[in-house]
Length: 354
Image (tube, rainbow, N blue to C red; front, side, top):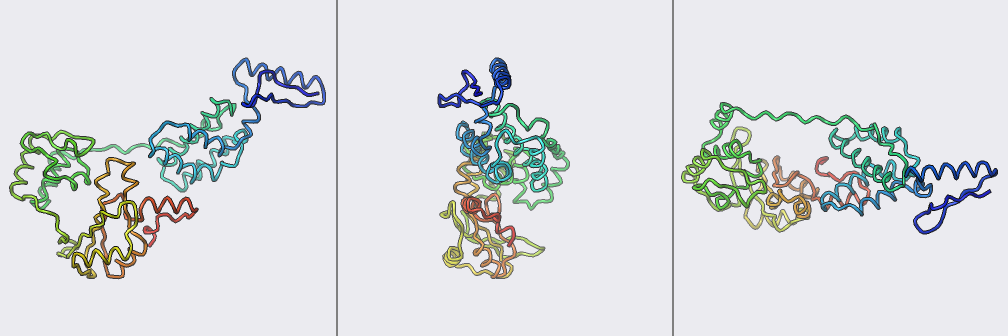
């Protein structure tokens, strides 16, 4: 006998039917389906047999989130969730499967990253329940322990005074800005004369999205520092104190390389342009301009430049031992990393292993 559930369709207007050898079994099936319909807990078997990969794609496309958030979700799905569970049907995924994934994440990732990836999977499967693709979520009671944030203990006034006293006089204002305004290191280093109104002590408005207020004491010291050490135009070479002695450093301007890697020929051309000579103790600073977009993550990841593996080897061959870059990390550009991941190359941080 064939039993069809009245009013139950697959989304295209077709009713699902199931065949039974006995009429009694068919009537029992219909009774159970009617009860589930009345409770609102009916799950179409056809939908629950669809893969997690299929539903995750629909779920991600429907989310109204920022582009940076969408890219993070897509990366976590492609690199961690779908390779393990993507081929499985929704109804076949069990809490044991989820716990196995959590264990794998715990072995390979930082606790907070693993916790966030589990949260993404739980959100997707909870949405599948709400959409009628799944009866219950297998993620219940499977979350790893939530990582604890280490408490931040501000420096005491005496500690700040000791820190300032240990700095060279011309750099004490940098420590004072960090302590008095709560600026990050990148914000302090990127500060320019035009971004601060010293006399009115309003400071930093329009330069950083956080716009902290400048205390009067900080404003007074900043004004004194500016008069004693006036700003000078950027120079292509600097001298840095390293390992107890003064050594020469060069700043190479690659602001025109937004979003791509610095190659050997780029390094050679810039070194020739400024007339620099690299020696075994030269410090090389790569000026990409990425720090200007540090408060705009979406723009930063599009424009962040990097150093190619060949470029790194070129500098190492010159005897360079210390390289700096005004980016989130010293490696290839984010665009190069994305291309490597899309190609299935697990080594998308090549400079970290050179």
